[in-house]
Image (cartoon, rainbow, N blue to C red; front, side):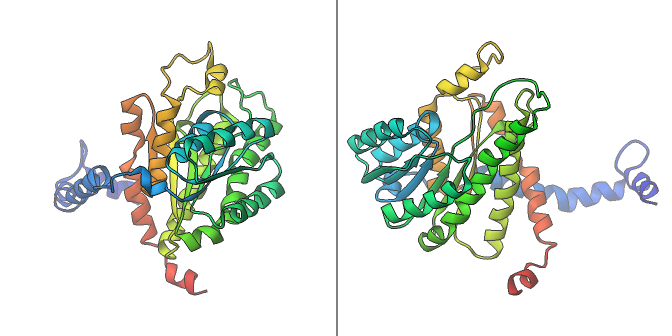
Length: 311
C-alpha cells in the first residue's frame, strides 16, 4: 500500500505537483531557517578568563592532547586535577602546570581499566579542588592500526576504557557538576562519526560515546539539568602516539595538537554541543550534519517526556 502511494506522490519521473508544492511552501523554508540557525547562530566569544579559578579534571593528561590541555588550562589560571597511568610523567605535568600559572594542580595516577578507580578518582579530585566545574574525558587504551583479527579481547578493552569508563566518570561527577552548572567534555574522533578501516574496536567505542552522550544531552535538556555536554570530533592530530601508529599506513597531514587542545577547551567553555577539529576544512564542513540535528529535534517532539519525568 505504501509503495503505490509513494508512486502517485512522486510521479513516474520525480515528485508530483502536490508534493512539490508542499515542500516549497513548508519544508524548504523550515529547512533553510534550520540551516541558517545551525551554521550562523552567534556564539559567545571565548575569553581565557572564563577558565580562571575553574575546577577542571583532565584524563589522559600525561601526553598528547591531554597534556596540552592541562598546560592551556594552567595558563588560564584554572585549578587542575590530572590523571593517567604514569605517576612519574604526571608529576612533571603538574610541576609544569604550576610554573605556567595554574591556581592549583594535583595528579592521581591509575588505570581506567579499573572502574572502581575511575569512580573513586572523581571523588578524590572533587575533594582536592572543593568541587568541579568541568570534566574533560580524553583517555584511551592503546590502539593498533590494523585489520580486525577477530580478537574479542581488543573490542572489550576498547569499549571498557574508551567508553564505559567515560560513563562511570560522568556519573560520579554529575552531583558536583549540577551544583556548579558545569560541563562534560568528551573527546571523540572522526572514526566515531564515519566508518574507518583498520580501527574497528576503537571506532566502535567512539560511536558509542556519540550515541550515549548525545542521548544524555537530550535528557538533560528536557529535564532541565544545567550541565552541558560537548562532543569533540577530532581528525588526525600530530601527537607522538598517533604519528607512530599511522606511520607508513596513512598518508595525511595532521593538525597541531596545541591548537586542537585549545579548540576543545573553547568548546567546553562555550557549552557547544559539538566541536569539529581537523586539518581538512571539507571534513569539518561535511561532518557537521544539520539533517541529523533536525531529525533529533523532530523525534524528541514525539516523546511524552512529562510522563517519564513525573514518574
